[in-house]
Image (cartoon, rainbow, N blue to C red; front, top):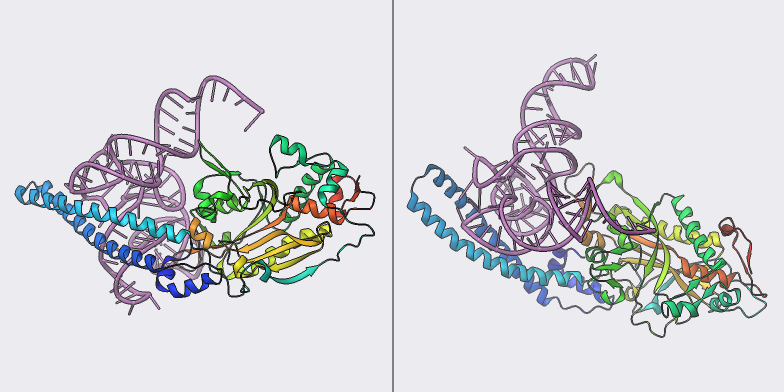
Length: 424
RNA sequence: GGAGAGGUGGCCGAGUGGUUUAAGGCGGCGGUCUUGAAAACCGCUGUGGGGGAUAACCUCACCGGGGGUUCAAAUCCCUCCCUCUCCGCCA
């Protein structure tokens, strides 16, 4: 959420910033409601102040048991004032709710360094790493490799669950598990505390990180009791510190968390219908940071490097792309996508998304910190990035390390986890 | 699922309708004393909103969440959430 004071005092600047994202937002109604809200607030506070002091007066009179008539008159007066206050409260509640709803639907303001653009075609490549593999045969798609090796079964997964599900079997299942362990070990060795959180969460948690109220249709939900299945570990892990005031000495906080993730993929019919790229259920190791505001852009760079290191250790070529304003996620102020090379598709595909949310999530989640030498509190900055998506990493390994005979070489870094050098 | 107990400020803990707009303690900060430290003593000590010049200061709200009764609610009522104990069931 944006700072409401900032929005009502600089609506033109906010409007302009959000237009770069492609949002056309009408602030007139909001500004009107906000003026009304503040005027009602002043009115009601003044009336409550009167009631407070008169009530004390009544208490005093009753105790002394004097001036009974005057006491009765005051009580009657306060009864009327109470009715007035109640009716103002009613109007105030309605207006506050509308103002709140408006604020919850405003996306974050892009950082100055974010390239201006309308969609993903205008994202800017920052750097490349690794050499693209050369094949003396036509490289296969991972779903063909998976079928040949008998390590991925899409057809039976369709029977037991539906489309966009997969069964990993044998060395496929082993590879999935190896990647999770490899990544967690790597990150926890670099100062990230390992977390295994709930993967069903409540509505408040989803609202705090920005999935709700705007993206309800992307989420799986249970009812009675109502829970949401997490679309990323970002949700439960960021919410660890919801409604907390941290001390400056606690920061920065780094967490690494493996979880399954669940996405409805509504509106992506016909996209990536084959293979592991787009599944309703997938595994991911997520990195989450809570940092001081002045550090957050350096922290975004190091977070991205930490995610890149996974690909480097696996020997998978990739590039880093800065998302342009039009492609930026709802809650993000700046995002780098890491895209891995997939020979089967002959293109780079997103495997990690590293974002700085600044105080956008912290404000929704009410995560603050206190500086040692200053009074009051400030919102922390939150960041997160995949480090990495397990399924897509597995895809990249199958496609980049495939050999003519259909076997797949296990990257050296994974051999301790796999116990073999080649999947055949 | 059944029965019971409870949720108060950074922490502990009192408080069943009106000098409690939260006692007391611990912790923390400042001071006195001291060569220094400790002890002792004195003072201060939350969050958010509104007003005011982003000052002093004034004011409203906040005792798990929400709603209600009342001139007045931490205190009474309703409802939801959570924690703990015992029983049952269970990976």
